[in-house]
Amino acid sequence: MQKRIIDVVVISDIHLGTFGCHANELLNYLKTISPKLLVINGDFIDGWQFSKRYFPVSHLQVIKEVMNLATQGTQVVYITGNHDEMLRRYSDIQLGNFKLTDKLVLDIDGKKTWIFHGDVFDSTTKGSAKLIAKLGGHGYDLLILLNRFINTILKLFGREKMSLSKKVKNSVKKAVSWINNFEQTAAELAIEQEYDTVICGHIHQPQQKVVETKDGKVTYLNSGDWIENLTALEFENGNWNIFYYNEKDFVQPSTQIIALHKKVPTLNVLTNEIGIFIKTAAIS
Image (cartoon, rainbow, N blue to C red; front, side, top):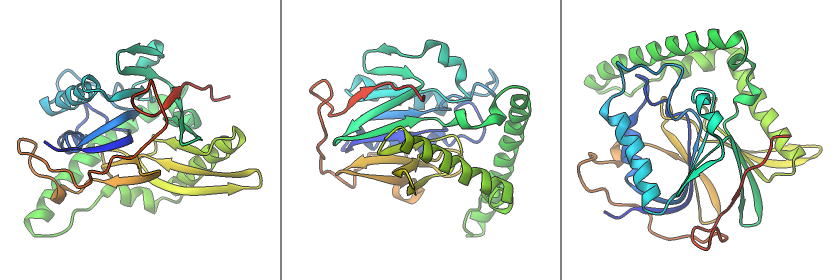
């Protein structure tokens, strides 16, 4: 099986253990890539909605594939999010090619890239509001299930799929404003800390843009999610790009998947092998 060799891949908000997780699609994607560094930017396993009654084999296979990548030489960095915050007590543990942490700074081609989940900016995930957020998570899961049923019907009639959650978000001005504020806050803090690039997850909104203020500018990126958007960030040939999963481009997991791109880019040196210098950095 030929795979695309990529310098850095960032995925986030997979939410394994929930009905909304597109585990099969993520598994298809992971089987087509061979990243030098894989960053899981939070909410990989959904501890808020975890249930012994629901954890399909496909969800376990995603975990297995991530471990396979690590054993094959990929450096895997798991950054904790709010839904897997129970892992934060084990932050900065490293086992072979696997590292667990809360935030990460990369030096890529002489540029400082700051990666963290982003829930630090979200007051709804803390204190008394956290219970409401958890209840909202269950409601969101039900909405995703309803959405899947509707999309099955649409597919039978040859119609395009739709996203109810996206329509709800885009129609609620407060939600749109909250997302914009989140992005602006992350960008301004990154500029203040003199980072060149800042990467977040959390808001399930894939994004790539340059934010400029009177104090400077920064490239803001968001890896999106594997619930609604099915996106990842890829760094190769000196550039960041958003990868959008399209089922038409993928065959079944059991069949051979041929890579589309084969050129191997270059990067700085990490332990003389993968070209990235990794260090943790405090937010403040």
